[in-house]
Amino acid sequence: MGAAAVRTVTIEEYLSNPAYRHSEWVGGEVVELNVGTGKHGKIQARCASKLINYLTESPIGDVYVELHCKLHIAGTLRYRLPDVCVKLGPPVDGHLEGAPDLCVEIRSPDDSISDQLAKFADYFANGCRLGWLILPEEQSVLVLAPGTPSPQVARVGDVLDGGSILPGLEIPVQSLFS
Image (cartoon, rainbow, N blue to C red; front, side, top):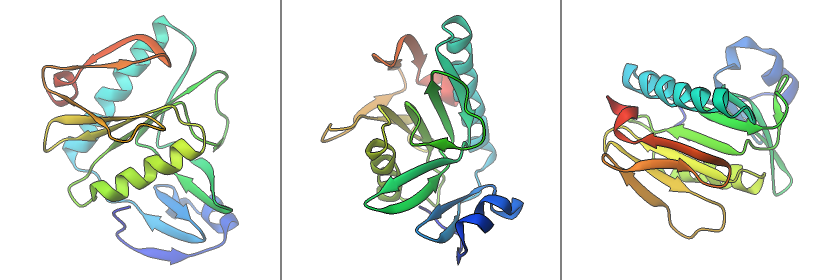
């Protein structure tokens, strides 16, 4: 999770306090996310832009940045904020009950890959069908799907696709980094 600090608060306080807007909530604890670098923000904007362009041509859903997703894991409530996500169907008003169809996380230098993969396990347990873990330092993307034992690695020179979720979507990996 790459937590900078952890505080125990009620769900009501978490949802109403603007100080927690860019934090996740896991089992009663506010988990501050690592602050992204300029590189992180640039990749986030590029990824969102490419998904928005696709969904402008194929209006089957919407793109969100840091959308609060209410997840249930083994009887425990969690709110996660994917860096970028796509939810097919009608627009989301407020937070999302469950996971989006596509979740994108961008690894910050202080984030561990195992913590990032744990987030995807939460997303998949709540209905997410495709995940991209963008690794800026390696200029690669781990492509994850529920029930798949190991991720595929997409590198510079490869093209990300939307599979059956976003048919016809193609994003050159290089375009996320330059």
